[in-house]
Length: 292
Image 1 (tube, rainbow, N blue to C red):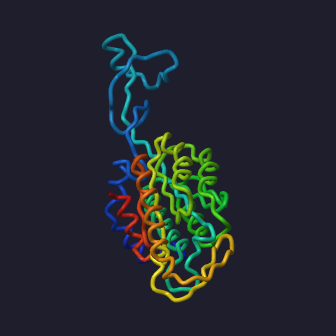
Image 2 (image 1 turned 135 degrees about the horizontal axis):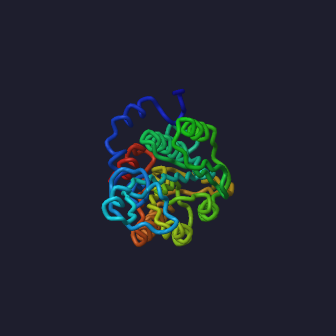
């Protein structure tokens, strides 16, 4: 496998020993593998049921017919694989911070997306990728092949922060593209209205998607710190503001805490998973979150 920016050899070695892939999928945590009653070749016999016109004659148990002179079908419990759907916020604000040794939020999200995609596909399950800013920039439908993984990793590598963001619009436009329910993993800095976000997520939740929201923030966005007079630039609108951070620090901290509380409360009420993650934390902690 060729070298990719967002999938380091050390990460692959760690992923190969990662103890959650198969277990989590079987229990419905990642790709939502579940039991369904289906006729045909399968894993485990479930029960007999009487033949009705239109059923496939190939599924008739002729030995039962020979004994009872009645037509019965054998039905089975079959494992059905659902899918992992990655939504990656690629708006301009995800490019923060610029020109530092720290990973930008988009780089951090891309490392995680690459690791999760490798893990899902290594278990022969399917992953899709939706990249968005103020609209859908790129959609890769679900796939489980090595070729699909290579395309996904190449797409992440070529990606750059885009325009303004509209998570709500992206979720609305993506809903018809996802034909089968599964696990939806949304990576964003969530600079949006929490109530509007969950209104846009409701169709997925109603369809039975398992939703994980990973709220990615640089530490300097959580706490403005003890800096002197500073210039703040809105990365999406270009608006500039020169201010002493100390005069805003507590108000900003209170605002961020209230925003996080709102997201967490709405997620709990909708039975979705929410976590705020500083980008200085290992992106493997997000995999641990999915496991538990």
